[in-house]
Image (cartoon, rainbow, N blue to C red; front, side):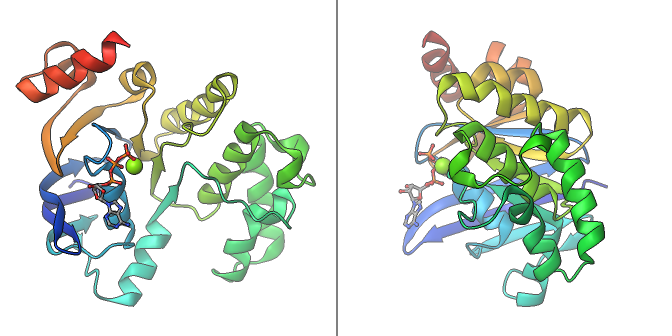
Length: 245
Ligand SMILES: Nc1ncnc2c1ncn2[C@@H]1O[C@H](COP(=O)(O)OP(=O)(O)OP(=O)(O)O)[C@@H](O)[C@H]1O
Ligand SMILES: [Mg+2]
């Protein structure tokens, strides 16, 4: 059974349809990258999955269970199964690195502080931030803050991690360290959705690449298909453009 299934999903902003007939099936441990031009619906798809924008039609199933996005309790459950990290890492500026990572599991989930802290320290070590537990966000580089934001999302112990352009706001020399963190999570078998403009990274890390255009999935396949042998004219055109850069 797929871990996540998206069936004929549709979403609007007001009267504008921004996602239409989206179908995707994702197995545990898959790394699914969403690519496509600005405005093609990549972020919107992640927002719908997280319950931040209610779908107009279609279904999302997690481990076979249909999610009812009109039900608050179910949205709460989704947010314990999936976590999202955005381009703007939005750390709490008045909290140390460790507190940023522990606050939600302790306050929202009511888990014991000691246990949460031990887990958070292990996560921060994993993302290479173990030496900065007591630092405040404004004492960190953008790449370091983004790695803390990833640890903060992982502290909620999601089954699926959604990363929306997590390197887009970073200076080029800081991109590598964040991508290394993502590689590590991929090797660990974390299921991920990745939106990224780092095409060589997308190609290397993804098990599936999904090309979106105008709110539709035009083509989905393994990286070799999408980048080397795209089946659709629009995919060919997009890939041709980005690979010339
Ligand atoms: N909050 C919003 N209110 C109204 N329309 C929106 C909103 N956010 C996005 N849209 C519209 O929805 C469509 C899809 O936008 P989305 O942000 O999903 O694109 P994207 O593929 O993530 O683009 P980018 O690569 O620029 O991040 C666009 O036409 C956009 O203008
Ligand atoms: Mg976006």
